Amino acid sequence: MERYYQPEIEKAPRETIVKLQNERLVNTVKRVYENVSHYRKKMDESGIKPEDIKSIDDLYKLPFSYKQDLRDTYPYGMFAVPMKDVVRLHASSGTTGKQIVVGYTENDLDLWSDCCARALTAAGCTEEDKVHVSYGYGLFTGGLGADAGSKKVGAVTIPVSSGNTQRQITILRDFGSTILCCTPSYALHMAETLYAQGYTKDDINLKAGIFGAEPWTNEMRQQIEEMLGIKAYDIYGLTEIIGPGVGFECSEQSGMHINEDHFIVEVIDPDTGEVLPDGTQGELVFTCITKEAFPIIRYRTRDIGVITREKCSCGRTLVKMTKPRGRTDDMLIIRGVNVFPSQIESVLIEKGYTANYQIVVDRENNFDSIEVRVELSPENFRDTIKGLDKQAKELSEALKVVLGLNAHVKLMEPNSIPRSEGKAVRVIDKRKLLD
Ligand code: DLL
Image (cartoon, rainbow, N blue to C red; front, side):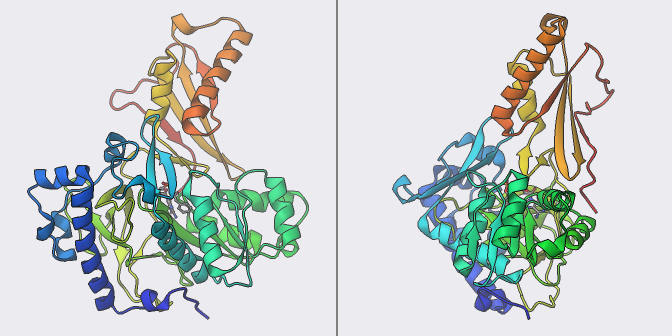
């Protein structure tokens, strides 16, 4: 039996959703124009006044927002309420060293937990369940987002956070977790650790998992489902919009319903910015229409996908998006952490290395690894092994500060990284992440 957390919205007739979206968009645009100088300036430059936006049909007239805007206004320049009304901050990687920061009011946290509660409920979660959250807690939105959704549903929340896989397995077994929330690669890693310890799916009590924050294939879904004896559901989101729960999968497991009463989705041609018809592949763009502290307008996610309004067997009428099919930029997601090659490059240059480097990403035993190969120049070459080891360690530590990840550093002899005649090949991603 299909469960809904807010059936009045999730199964609402199209007209109801459009009416909500129209009202909410008009209000949001007015609010950001009045309260955020960044939007006022951008709208003035494009000759758009809030009164020009009368319904969602006018959305295309508004200027896009980009990650760069968050950097330019860092840290709080795009907040639409005074700081006294902000009760939480989250952050995620920017394209260089600095993180991008987003804020939430009490109401924002509440609607975010509703979005996550819809996702959990669609995966079968009730107040009888024990939700094991292994997304990281902290500035990353995964942990606290899933946690808040579980609290709303009234389930037992087990806030394990990420890491220490042995301990995760002990908790899964001893506490009888029934729903697992983590990245799909970590779910597989946990499954393998479980079997390596001599257990099987019969030794745990899981029935479902809600996995996202990184791309994963349907083959991976099958593997996870078989090993853990569960149904594995996808969940999509990004810090700039709210965190997890922008979209979530239902029993049909064929794409994610977007919480359209809070976020308007558009698909655009990434080159021209033109809005594309439903069913066409393009870049996903979201507009927040209910958030108070950080209501971003027409945010270019860089995620490539397709949306469809075909009837879904689950009964929900909310529009569906496919699994993201890649990105229009070079962002990598490693163990759920967003990494831009430019962040690595800035560290290398700051530490006096040349820009001759290569990033090799791999996945072994469902655990992502990242190796940064960097060429030494005659000036920074130390000719003792001890000296080289020390140098590699120092660089790895500097990278960890910026990326929040352990990267293996391999120092290479001068001129040993292949030069390309065209664009430099900086990233070698050996993982197979797309179907
Ligand atoms: O990853 C939020 C999240 C947490 C989503 C937990 C789901 C579960 P960011 O760190 O800002 O936020 O990364 C956002 O991750 O633009 C996508 O490229 C990618 N991404 C998120 N969910 C999925 C998914 C969180 N289900 C970026 N499939 C997004 C593929 C995903 N990619």
